[in-house]
Image 1 (cartoon, helix red, strand yellow):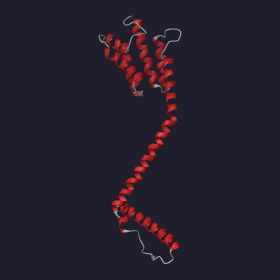
Image 2 (cartoon, one colour; image 1 turned 180 degrees about the vertical axis):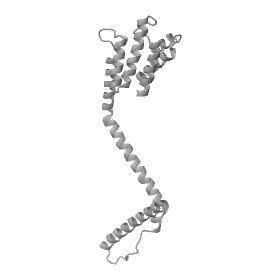
Image 3 (cartoon, rainbow, N blue to C red; image 1 turned 90 degrees about the vertical axis):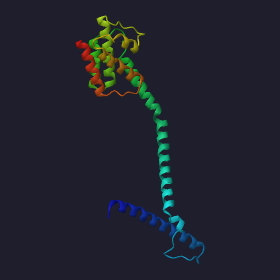
Image 4 (cartoon, rainbow, N blue to C red; image 1 turned 135 degrees about the vertical axis):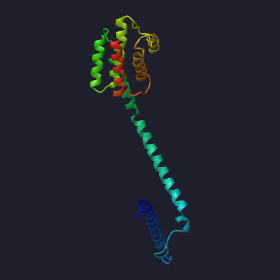
Length: 205
């Protein structure tokens, strides 16, 4: 017997068993109120209840109810745990801000590279990429090509580095900074390796 025929007969057998049990239970209930109720072992449900169409509709209703139940549970879980998720994201953002801002002095390129390395060894590829970005800005400032200004945006930096020999490497770090800070782009190891390679190109140039 093939697997398909087994499954089909299994469903039919289960439905027949359920039908038989319901019929016997109903016959028992009627016999309590009417001892003369004509019963027999061959008693069964009406023919319309055995319709395959009715059985299909019952299955559809069953799975729809299951889907609604799962959606309701998921919604309740989201409502319950969303404050914790938002709190966790805010903590990550605050940690990133602390990492990529200078409290009392201007960090050197070597300082930013050391921070990037530490973050990378801890698996924190987001902060590792952001530190490479800050190292790039500091290097531009130290070389005198593009002095840092607090009001300068990534778009302005992109415009200023267009004429540089390693413009594509600068663009890689600037665009990555925008993606990590203003979108839902995940920070992966491969992304960090791309940023690291871009910084090496800038350093060599």
